[in-house]
Length: 137
Image 1: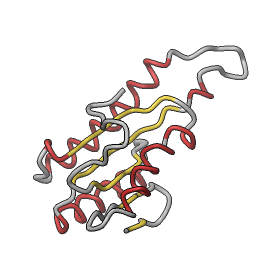
Image 2 (image 1 turned 60 degrees about the horizontal axis):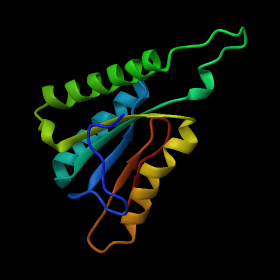
Image 3 (image 1 turned 90 degrees about the horizontal axis):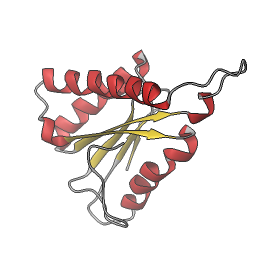
Image 4 (image 1 turned 120 degrees about the vertical axis):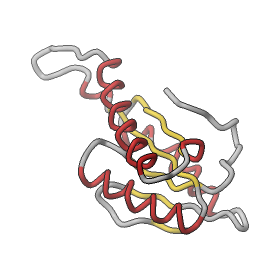
């Protein structure tokens, strides 16, 4: 589920800071860092939450409703967007989406977009992960 999507092979414009959001304190620190960086650079912010579909079936045979898990991701994104808005960051400069699937697999496309953008002249991107240092290109 996405608030907006790019056409195949199209890169976002202007440059965006990609931030993984999972509702944790570390993720909110990444959002805070992204806010400061976006204010300094003029970049937009791209918030992404991945719902691990591997947890849809528990060890006890309980099947979880993916819409419930997706709504939890939407809530985490809403908190991050509210933080950005409360700090004066324009809503039109924020993209957010919930991706269904194993995080490593579904985050590969947004990360690939950032990686591909690194090879475009005058098109820097920043990737923020809740538990890792920022990668600024």
